[in-house]
Every structure is written in structure tokens, then in C-alpha cells.
View 1 (cartoon, rainbow, N blue to C red):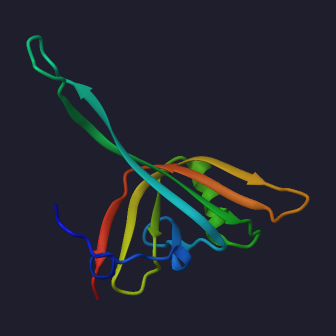
View 2: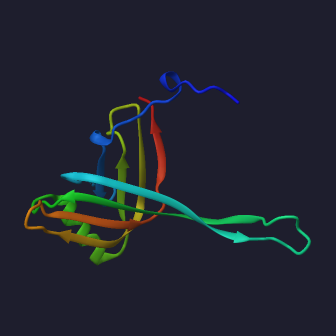
View 3: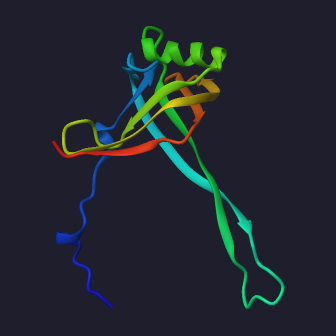
Length: 146
């Protein structure tokens, strides 16, 4: 078994410089006041086991992605307003997620064909009003070295 040296093999990243861009390509704008985002990619699995096989076997279907973004609500943020517009239109928008910001080297996840599935606005007497939305659409991972 290979030895693992955390000091030299892995780099950990903080999400504090992460960001989200939203809109119609190429007019994406940064979503203001983002507190968190998540993205999950999955694939349906299909069993292909036949009689007489020694164990079960599977194959994967078409990949899909879902995600969510949470922010402090802003009445003046163009990108947050655009989320409401795109949900009503239902015709697909551009989302780009930056886990660590966009100063090279960086990774981003992007698609020009996501649909907005839901929007939630939450208020609490002891807190800040939050705005969140969920989306569906497979994002493409891009690495930018310089």
C-alpha cells in the first residue's frame, strides 16, 4: 500500500473566493452575496445481469446534473432578478460555478442550458432574508492554467 504525505500530495482549497455567474450567454453577471452553492452529477444505472451470471452487472445511462445556490437577498442584483425571469421563461440559461474564484489556475463548472427548477425566499425575525434557487443541467468542468 502506498504511503500518503498530506503535505506534498494534496492541496486543499477554501470556498471563500468562490462565486456564481448567471444569465444568458455571453451576458452572464456575477450573483451578489452568495453564501454557498452545490452541484451534484449522477447517472441512472441499469442492471444487465443474465441468468447464470456469477454476480450482478450494470451499465450507466445518460449523466445529469442538479445544483443549488444560496445568497443573501438583494433587491438590486441583476443576476438574482434574472433567475426569476429565467424560471418564468423556462428556456435555459447559463450558470457558471467557481469553487475557488477565477484567478488562474482555477476550475469552473458551466453550462448554457440549465433550467431553474425552484426559487425560495426565506425570512426570519432574527436573520437576514435569503434567496436560493435550484437548477437542473449537466455542467462541464474546465481547468484554466493561466
